[in-house]
Amino acid sequence: MTYPPIDSYAFLSDTHTAALVAADGAVEWFCVPHFAGDAVFARLLDRNRGGVLELTVAGCAEPTRRYLPDTLVLESRWSTPQGSAVVQDFLAVAPGEGAQPLRADKMLVRRVTVEHGTIQLAMRVVPRVGYGARDVTWERAGRRWRAVGTDLWVGGDLPAEAGGGELRIEAELSAGTTVALLVGYDDDATDFVDPDELLARTCRTWQTWSARSDYTGFGSDAVRHSALVLRGLSFDETGALIAAPTTSLPEEIGGVRNWDYRYAWHRDAALLLLALFRLGHAEEGQRYLHFLISVCTGDLLTPLVDILGSTAEEQELPHLEGYAGSRPVRIGNEAAEQVQFDTYGHILDAALVYQQLTGDLTGEQWALLRKHVDVMADRWHEPDHGIWEVRGPRQHYVNAKVMTWVCLDRGIRLAELLDDRTADVQRWRTARDAVHAEVLERGFNPQVGSFVMTYGSTELDASLLRMPLVGFLPGDDPRMLATIDRMRQELEIGPALLRRYRADDGLPGEEGAFLLCSFELVSALVLAGQRDEARKLFDQLSAYAGPLGLYAEQLAADGTALGNYPQAFTHLALIEAALNLDAAGDRDALHEWADRGGR
Image 1: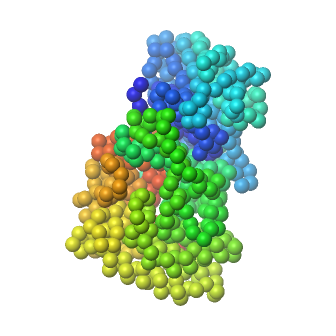
Image 2: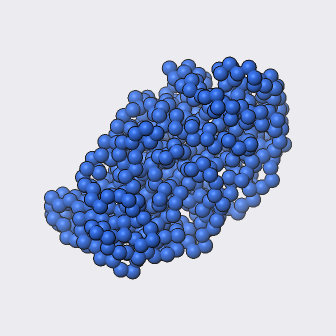
Image 3: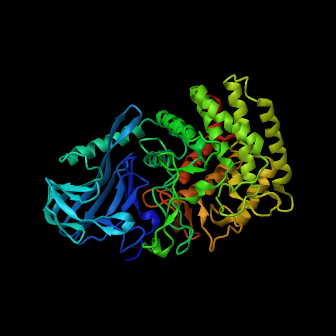
């Protein structure tokens, strides 16, 4: 069996876990009991060993698919000469209350309605625990089947037969018939639920959430869809945003650049907070800020945490062949052990934005944050591992220095907003100005004609496109204009497709274009006064979206999707680029909006 294109999968979420549905109707990725749990359906990473939930209609290889408007409910239409059926696939959600605005019903639902004629329907439920390592045993439990030793259960309208670790369902269905298969991952769920009510309630819940946004500007359809994807990647219990719901989808087909992205990175904390508030989702923005500060209690900040605020040891799963033979398959992420000073800047930027928009930062929260501003005032001159997590020695990464400047600058501004006269603001101001001067002196290489990745190097780094977006330099500063031009010459691998860097990072092979940076190029061009060129690139990047409007982390030069999927950072940068194009000002539209207090 061949592997489907990464961006051909549909993404389902109940904000507690996620599922990926292939174009042929097979659920090939599903982790329980949450995003970072065991992938009981993992055919995405191994066509033979990975579990799967298949649905087929005889005579139709692939249905036509779409999302129901403003939802994460997938609708597939299956047509044959004998009849046709429509299938709605979704992870059921309901309105929440209090600290959880959405509530997961913890059920994957496949609802089938025959529109005309007759169809031959077949389903196979083949979970394998331990990321495909072991079969399950099924036992009958009242009106449903239970996978022994797990919280998985299966119920529905049609009789099933168990054997060989799987459940099999086969039926001939005629026009007007509606049946459903329910796959629960919480053994405490009730025996009977109405799938029609689940569908209606799930649609209402997503549509009500989407309707909060009144944004109608440039790229509004893509912005609204991206916001929905981001909500689907946010964990209901803590508000943490995972980078992607998958692990080990390769940055190079057949290569070793395969990482677990089911973690919350802080590198775009402010951007996420800005997007949530700007699009009318203040409640989610507040929850995310509280989660962010809750992981700031230690002396040093880790660059990433899991959905519960912890870290996990990186492991390899040798029993899986990996997507298209891309090995190793990894769970956990060793990057959590790195020192990344840019993390401090992102978190302080987010805190300032939050205070500007709400005024709700508490004294206790500020005390935690202030400690980290002090740390950067002391340590800004030290090397670190850099934003891209190169697994080598620490160096003086220019992006890290820029974000250290952001940390100090935002700390100063927060102290002024909070009228904190005990903070050592003068020391922070001295350090901030020293960082700025050093970056201009040592971070720009006149021979290259660009800001570069590390002091003294000639390598380019696309993360430096954020310099004007965080206010380090004006977007039309001659050094920024030269940097943009140089990056387009050296890092573009296709129209609008920008790699992160070309430096030797110690790993064999090479990655594709990094879509976060590609969309940030659009924003940088807007701030550089080149709106027409930015619009052209945005349109080109829009054409690279998958058939359901979803983006992976990267693209090859030929448009092949690479990396984990769907990628939160890509959709965040799309939102930022669209809003900058809509405003077309000389400052980043989102930060300017926050400076005005959300007006």
